[in-house]
Image (cartoon, rainbow, N blue to C red; front, side):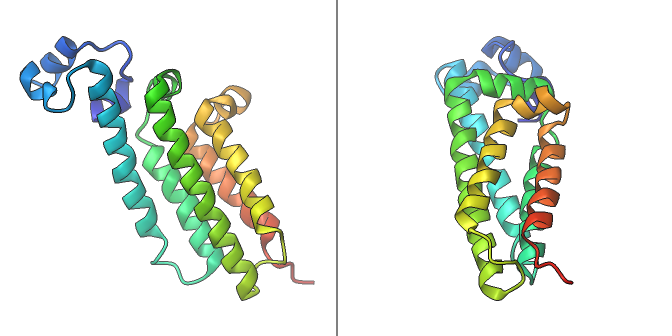
Length: 176
């Protein structure tokens, strides 16, 4: 996966992968019968591993604000190894993009849950958790599609860090 993350995958053939990874094509066929299947399985594995890392960041934090910050920063950290080429290739590959979109939707639901938790506990002002989460989800979708990178120059990881700051600054209880 590190090869895909560093260089992208659209330009690589199965023969390239076999040579670069110092393995036989039959070894690659264990991951899929075609380059598309190998790609989708590699991307699926990347996001499965990233999801585990991201979710593990939450229990370590006691307060809802810390939990949201840890969650969104963990998404950024998980995406940090992904090059701009990988992200461009991901956006251009229908099945890989669908995997990223599914993970983005799951992350948006998780953010909504964390916001609602913070509103219930009184740490956050009484915001409409679904609206804030939907707004965050729209930004996440723009990050995923590459629109944020195009508009701002921010990579996906840095954009998630900025999103964490924006969401938290918008929902924290204001002290007079």
